[in-house]
Image (cartoon, rainbow, N blue to C red; front, side, top):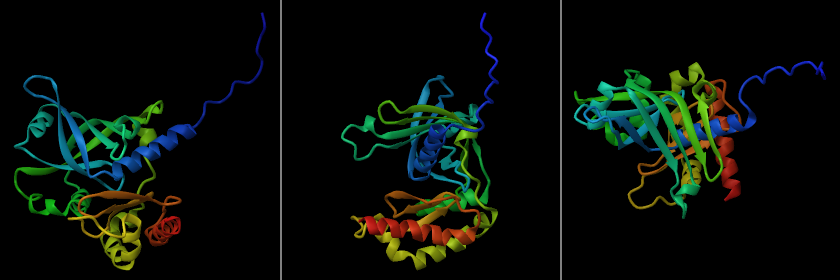
Length: 254
């Protein structure tokens, strides 16, 4: 009998490079979306029930959505918190199945986090009129895993620990509204160039509506875009330069 005396290889620490890249793609896809499909379990029949909602993310990337107790999906969640959110980036593809999409799976619950509220309204200004209605509340999804399809053959399911990105620097979370206001004033021209120089009908100007360690969220009323930094920010003071670098890089490529 042959005996293999070679020392056993230690288990690999952390996710593989491919898993890390897919996790980053999922985070960017979720942060760059204005809407998602919410799947809940029908409280009356037990069947899957899918509905369309508008979404944002908190500074750490958790999905945030505003829903009414009058809606069927809210009543479903009150009876069974299990839910999933489908985000897709298939617009513009002749074959939508060739585009990227990700389904986040977990449990939904009401959040009273003030930052989540502020971020949602910044992304969807029209929601300010209903956010304080007594029948409306903000919810978040505690993600357990994500299923990603990045086109044909690129399919992966990731657990929440692999999906999680770098945490938002505490000082960035604390100063985000003021920093966003400053960036929207100082970078107005570059933001329009990054989004589109000439807004389409009914679109407003592009503006920053969210900041996190990995990048910035942009929106113009009808569309959203994601700007990923070249490296994660470890402090709020780094954000203006990191954003300017990416906006400038895009300008040289146009």
